[in-house]
Image 1: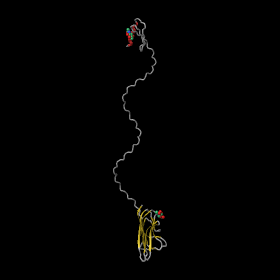
Image 2: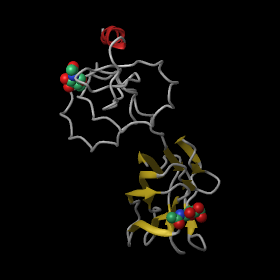
Image 3: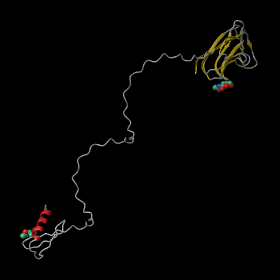
Image 4: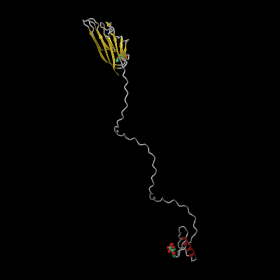
Length: 244
Ligand SMILES: *[C@@H]1O[C@H](CO)[C@@H](O)[C@H](O)[C@H]1NC(C)=O
Ligand SMILES: *[C@@H]1O[C@H](CO)[C@@H](O)[C@H](O)[C@H]1NC(C)=O
């Protein structure tokens, strides 16, 4: 619009008198000359070449904050945390179900023996281990007939008993001992005195034995005698009370 106005003005005023140049003004976007004689005359020339690009201007002010964005996708699983502290003791649980019937404990070993001497032993020259010729029982085989000694194969508590009998004659006597590994356990003694008679007695002991321990009956020293015959007066017996 302004351009058209200016062109019309140039056409109209170009026919009028030309005044001296009073003032010169350059308008933006065009080249114009103004003659001041109470009349403005603007002469428009073709625009020159585009000038070089100006320098980058200063940075503008910060804009107003934008609206809040939508939430992002959940992040990746983090690393395992530290071990927590030990919790408190829990309450007692309910009673369990009744168990199945148990099995019998292993059968305890049976060790028992009973042996008999059917002959007398008259005034041996030294202390003598009593030998018994007849075996009534020997369950477990711990009594050794060839030595007259009981040898424990099972450790435990044993009961032993033995008998003695004097010959039918005055002043005869016996003194016998139950021995364990050469140590005196219990003794038995009788003396007829002036009487011609038989006297019979027994003694017994409960012994705790280790496997390998030996127990036997021994007639002590000389000038002592024991009597027996087919009526089996001299005996030696024992059995295991409890193993372990
Ligand atoms: C000439 O132009 C000037 C500046 O635009 C203006 O102030 C003046 O009044 C004009 N004169 C006439 C006679 O139009
Ligand atoms: C008893 O004697 C037997 C045979 O000599 C031996 O093996 C055993 O270790 C002895 N026992 C003890 C407690 O000394």
